[in-house]
Image (cartoon, rainbow, N blue to C red):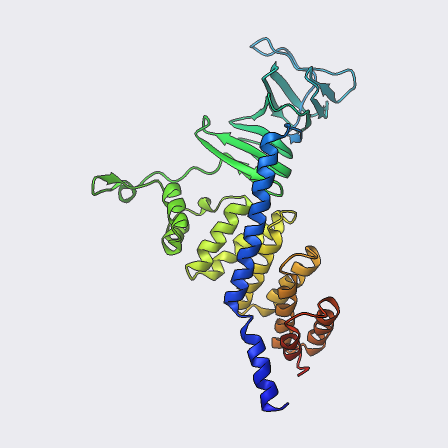
Length: 357
């Protein structure tokens, strides 16, 4: 290849550095955030239509001490409320009680087992499901609630729910594709160092200090708090993405890997899952775990086809194959690039990774 041709290829490659990739990721985040805000607006004005899955429910049990009795249905396994909502249960293993059914409010208690709720639209009526110390408020969604000893597991298929505990003092929103175990682990009791008063102001609780440092982009400070209080990483996609960014941007990339892996493993249907998978591939590549990175970039394309990061993922997958000396794989991927992106700006870069130039 002539020297002027090599110089031309190098110039082509300069436009696709990590900074440009970060800008692409930022655009993807902005696009997803915009869609989420639109959905939240629609949900706020729409009816509370939901299908809720909850830990088990028995149709027949003695009257409770407050005089309320389980609501039975003519069809075995189906409870039909007066206002139109339905609860489907397993009569053999479940127990649920309707505590209140008013035009403005419905309250249901999940005692044990599992139940599926179909809630009719009614923006003037709240619908709450209590499960132990946890309360789930329907915001317009399909979700699962399962009693697990003194904990409650919540998994949302679509939409969003509000989960509260600790007498309502603590709460979290769980969106479609996310899940969590509630109540969240209590923060460790404050030590003398935590409670030390400096300048007349008592030190913030770890959760508030963590969020404040994240909000001010003090990732090193946030990571120092997260390292001492790992439960702050949370369970939802948003919380795990933040924890991963805190680790990556504070120069602890290896600690970001488990957070990103959890998103890909536990929340594959979330619209941000492909973003987490791509970031995981980049992080693994930077750690020298090239084969794992190549596999993850392949998943970005296969598991979430048509996503905005697919082209970049294919380029990086080809690069990883070339770095591993797997030229046959690299050249096959280069062929896929030419097929899928015939006018792609990174054709020369892909061919160079595949040793075709």
